Length: 269
Image (cartoon, helix red, strand yellow):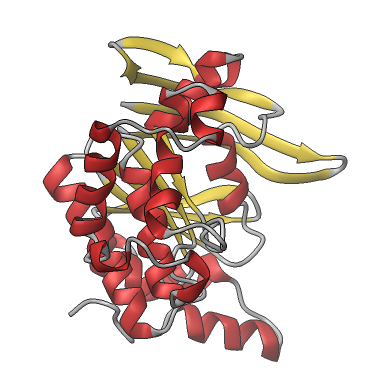
């Protein structure tokens, strides 16, 4: 169980995340939706400890052998352990362009080894087998020896997901994982995340801009506006009227963004 309690993040006078609270049971797939600037990415970065909260707590009892910990209070090695078990997939992939695909995936094993082992790429046979299996699951094993910068955007995102898988996570965070992809590749990536969620029982929390994508893939939708949660429930409970309120309106530019976010174009097969 992941519990977020009164989590707040401020940047000077700007409140990016405003007193947010919710719980996510193990194995749920959650889509966080909202306009750009709603606080979605900041929220995920705090959960992963890439950003520190200004106040509030993040509690989890599913990573440190059943011990409930306040993620915000972790330091040193425990933070690194948390990031290993709470993996992050980014919009821009964050691969090392000049390295081979298999080497990029093996970077997900960093937290299990010394810095020297990682720098010299002296990973064990077991690590390499784990990386190959992850690439097989993402249908990318045939590209294992290709440089990352030779791949398409959709292929790079699948490599990034494979890298997250070899961290052996309990929670997988995805920050706008399909924002820069075309429809075909977006479908492949979302199908992969859903399959991992269902087959492995890994909790998946994904920021998504399009409401229809969240409806297609997620068990639950959390809607954010101006840093606060304004909706939390199953996809079927989110009406168009509520969604329009969530995304906001007013002004031609804003209305165009609303219509795009509410687009009925589905990424699902």
